[in-house]
Every structure is written in structure tokens, then in C-alpha cells.
Image (cartoon, rainbow, N blue to C red; front, top):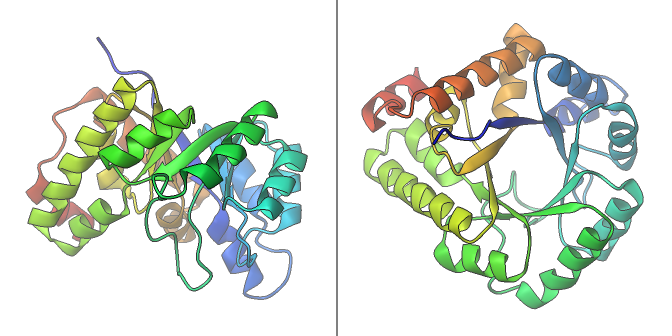
Amino acid sequence: MSAPPLRLGVNVDHVATLRNARAGDRPDPVRAALAAIGAGADSITAHLREDRRHIRDDDMARLKAEIPKPLNFEMAATEDMLRIALATRPHAACLVPERREELTTEGGLDVVGQHNALAPFIARLGDAGVRVSLFIAAEPRQIEMAARLRAPVIEIHTGAWCDAVVDGHAAKADAEWKRIVAGAALARSAGLEVHAGHGLDYVTAERIAALPEIVELNIGYYMIGEALFVGISETVRAMRAAMDRGRKNPGSPNLASLNHASKA
């Protein structure tokens, strides 16, 4: 049986990071989102953080109003973010952990330890027609709790694997990869839709695209960096091509070639 099509969600947070460096209006993350969609992106992801370090409230409103593809609203599980999400009514909301002092999201959401707090957020967003995703590590306890909470989707945090690949830590990368493979299979068997993201580049996206349980990759920082050199449209097309290669050829590069290619 062939794997289902693999969707690409492009995260435009760091277009806003660059804009905010001068406190102006350019570059415009909505323009970047439209260019990404024109080049083949299936959806747009944006994280409205409590400190508004990149995406701002008006960005979310404009993205919802102006893009012709689904908007994935990344958010912490706070009442303020819930209010904004319910007013925005995105296609999806991905609940993520958030700390002011972190440079980027450092790990998965602890749905086991926070299940009582998360349950009403999942319910209220779902009642409003917003599809809820939980950004979690590929750990059995977290996956099983996500299913018990009736979140329809999980997004597996791939950061530890991607970092180990880029840094050439073969043993750690292999262990993290095995966790992702097992976690994706467990989640699918529990009836969850499985997405993945964080730290992915062309090589790791091609590798993870071979997993038939995963139906969506959300990628941002690497693509925005590449876009500085070749443009966002070409970057989206190159990422789409890498994902398609991985999907069509499950015999993806072995770990040694992954390390070499990512560091090149």
C-alpha cells in the first residue's frame, strides 16, 4: 500500500524576525507566505509568542484573511492565546511549550504532566472548528496521553534528531531516529494524524518523508535562511522535491551519508 501524500507547511516566523530588527513593515511575512504557497506550500505556520518576538497579532489576522491555504496557528496554552485563536479561527492550532528565555522551542509539550490543563484548550478549540495538534516528543507516554485527550493530531518534535545529524553524533542520531520511527507508528495505530517538524533541512526532510505514517512536515528556520540566497520560491520547490524523493524512495540515505550531507 502506497504512503499518503506528504504536505509541506512553511513557517514564516523568521521573516517577521528580520522585519522586527528594524521595527518596520518589511519584509512582510504575509508576502512570504503567498510566495511560498505559489511555489507549492500546502499550508502556512506562524507562532504568535507571548513576547511577540517575531509574529505579531496583526500578522495572524492578515494571514488568515489573505492566504488561500490553511493557516496553522502555533500557540502556548494560555487564555490570551486561546482568545486570539478563537477570534482568528485558523484551520489548525498547534499547542507548543513556550519559555521567554528560550531561543526556540526546546522540546515537546508535556501532555502527561499537563493533561488537566490542556484538556479544556483542546475541547474549546475543537468546538470552534479548529483542528488541534500537540507538539510532542516521540515518547510513548506522551503519544498515548495525546490520544486520550482526543487531540486529532500530534506533531513530533524532530529537533534532537536533526541536531545530532548536523553535529555528526551518529549514535545519538540513530537512537533519536529509532524513537521517531517507533513514535510515528504508535501514534498512527492510536488513530492520530502524525506531523513532524523542528530543525529539518533538505536531507533530514527527505529521510523522514520515507515514513508513511507522517503526512505533514512543518519547516521554517532553515528554509528562510536558504531563501536569503536563492529566494523563497526556489527554496520551497527544492524542499518539496526533497520530500517527494523521500516519499517515493523509502530506501533513504543511511546515517553516514545523512551526516556528511547535512554538514556539507
